[in-house]
Length: 340
Image 1 (cartoon, rainbow, N blue to C red):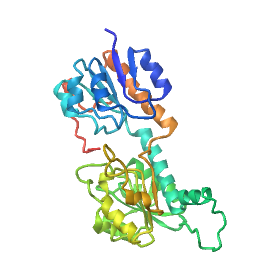
Image 2: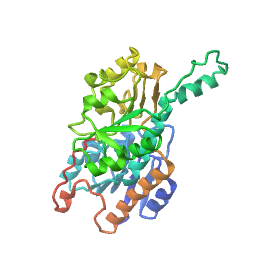
Image 3: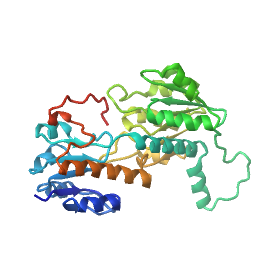
Image 4: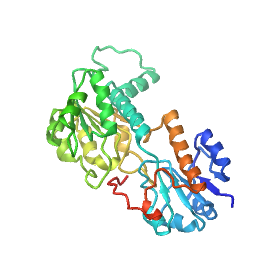
């Protein structure tokens, strides 16, 4: 039997070529639009393997429509857009990719967003493109320098740790909050000090949100914590939109109670109304990016090829490397708190 594989978005060419060598590949190659719901339901009907990417949800209805389905391979660390329960009921394994190289890329992007927001780089770019070169006041376009400032990191996992390294290299002090604090030796190595969330929000000049989205971190940063921030403070979120109370942040920004924000993730990223609110889009002191924390060419290429490797192993009769529902292989279910 020749495997039939569906890829519902464009992926790097090297991954496409390897998939073509494995079986009959159906690739939705549009870049101007996403696959519609009707197109998706029709496309999955005779497929054996679904390549899963964010923005194309494989819910229970889609999985049920794929009557010949054998594997869902996600190019994602925590594919909340895949109904793993529905797949497990059918005995269909769902594979993912590890967080290793992805974390370093997201940390680099987080720090880039922090720098761009503190230095008002997108605002300055728009200013210049609008033909407003001349400034008559020496304080007309002041940014916030990083050295000598305190960076508070919420969630000192792989991403937060790498952000801390970059911050220390820029002469910043680092404080952090984590459910289980680092060991004293780890704190010394990073030059980071533990704080309660309340103290972190009070003391920090810049705050980076980097925790996983779990039941415990959902809604973690609300109006009470935002109210603790300095008027000169800046908040960066590259975690998940649901970690942060977006409305409370917007109110603080509009009222001028904090200096600014840089956001790559938002409370609503699915249809019909994805992305930031109109109010957030209108604020000059907010830098907005469309959830691109892993969108480096090199990283996306690695992500795609790791997903292909899981597919290759499955077709060869081997267990994929990264299985989210190992119970379909008679193994103990994973205990993963991540929900997005």
